[in-house]
Length: 211
Ligand SMILES: N[C@@H](CCC(=O)N[C@@H](CS)C(=O)NCC(=O)O)C(=O)O
Image (cartoon, rainbow, N blue to C red; front, side, top):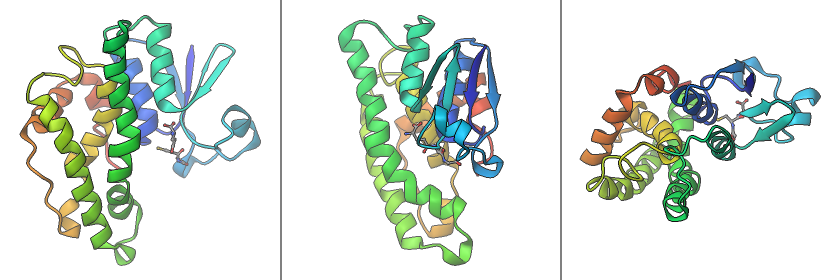
């Protein structure tokens, strides 16, 4: 059975477990990283020299990097509605996967870290607000796209949803008000987020307390 190494609260682990749930793939998830530790142990670093989660083992094949894992699993299990084979449709999905790591993730990072991982006394509200504004601006690009289509790459959710949907949950549920930020309205992103929230796999894997 597929093994997924990584704590359930990691957004990068959630991409992998959410996809596995969506395509009905059995897996065993092993808690590692964060409060569980173990990710700097030599045995784990032999699988993933970064000491980060997630890592998967599929038989004798080991892989790290969450977006690459999602592409591998979709290919391996012919989940083509999630990862189309037609090359332009595939490029469209991959573009948004790359955008999630190059634009949206970095924009949101200081907000998440400041509001969730930093004791209140040490918080820098201006940095959190700036992160909130960068996140709103990035999501504005997605909002314009979603004005004309139900899902990012067309009529069915794809790996683009998997890599962006984890960030949107946090954008909607971080306590931005504690730093004086009010997220932008972005009606199309909100409608799309509500579509995700109607999916049992998203509710089970992603809609959990943010820690
Ligand atoms: N680019 C990597 C990033 C992995 C990453 O940063 N993982 C974080 C959790 S989201 C981690 O391992 N943090 C250390 C820990 O959880 O102990 C990926 O997408 O897999």
